[in-house]
Each structure stands twice: as C-alpha cells, then as structure tokens.
Image 1 (cartoon, rainbow, N blue to C red):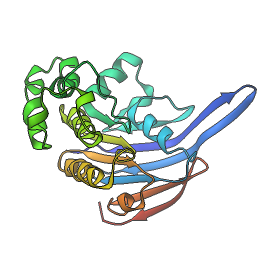
Image 2: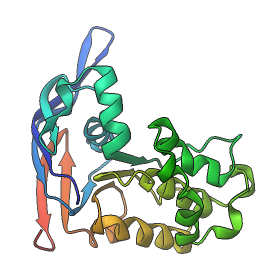
Image 3: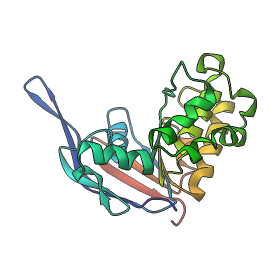
Length: 227
C-alpha cells in the first residue's frame, strides 16, 4: 500500500550572508496512497527542496511533513533515519551508486542496513525484473546511464517502501533509456506512492496529478486522473 503524504505550511529558508533566501513559503499539499504526482516548475522554484523535505533529507524552517500518520519533521535524527530506511525510497538523477560494489551488492544495501537479510536476498530477482539479470556482477563503471538508473530503482524498491521519490530520474538519459526507466518507476504505483520532480512535460502529462511550483509556492494543480 502506498504512503499517504501530508504537507502543512512547509517553508524553507537559507542564509546568504546577512540576507535570508526563502526557497519554499507556505506549501500545503496532500498526496494520496498509490498516486503518481509530478512536481514541476522553473529552476529555482523549490522542486528539489520540496522533495528533500518529503524524504526527510532536509529539515523545514517551519511547517510539517506527515507520512502515514508519522510527522517526520518532529522525529530526531535516529528515528528519522529508521523511518526513512523502511518507508522511503529515493532515486537520484546522478544515480548515487557505490562505485566499489557490483549492481547486486548496490541493490542489497538498504535491506542490509535494516538487517533485513531476507529482502537483501531478493536483490538478484529484482534486477532480473528490471532487465539486468545479466549485469549482476558488473560495477557501475561498466554500466550505461540507463542501466545505472535501473539499478537505482531496484535499490530504492528492495525494502518495498510506501513512498518512492525521484529527482529528475531521466535527466541524464537518452529518450529510449529514459522511457524504460519511467515505465519501471511508474510500475511501482501498485505498492508505493510515487513523486517525481521533472522538467519534462511528457512525464508530467502521464502523472495522475501535476503540482506546479513558482517562487516557492504552489502556482497550479492539474488533475489528470482521479486518485
């Protein structure tokens, strides 16, 4: 079952010398279980910052984020790390694979960190499902960009998180590889809520809902499919 995400009055400020830079300002948002949501907007609109706050990778200056009834913005670092490891999968544009580990070893990492060795044992089968059964023992340097992103999707999915977050997951890929990655990501809606930050209008058009940001606020919400 996908996660239920609630964002209440989220704001994020940064200091630039003596000046305060507000990247997000009073964002309210609800994302329903198993919904696919695209977050769009121009560079600097706050898209990646919002995604990092949803993932618990950053702390808001004000407001709160609640996932499945747990207000993650109120958790201490240890509790947040445990929650994130079990419930949130994050897919980076730059893949963030560990260079010294093979594909199958990279996929195992989140489950091993949780001590869930039964799930870790499913890494090879998961790579088979994303079409990389022949690449299990290859290192990231031996993989194409599309292959690395498929490994990253498998890694983010291995503990079956209720929320999958992706930051420009096709941004470094050619159109064919990007399409394959997108298909794999959107297939995860059966078990997870999927939130994708993207500049690509064609990706946004395939989501259930598009949230457009501008100047740190929600400028528009486009419903494309009932959740």
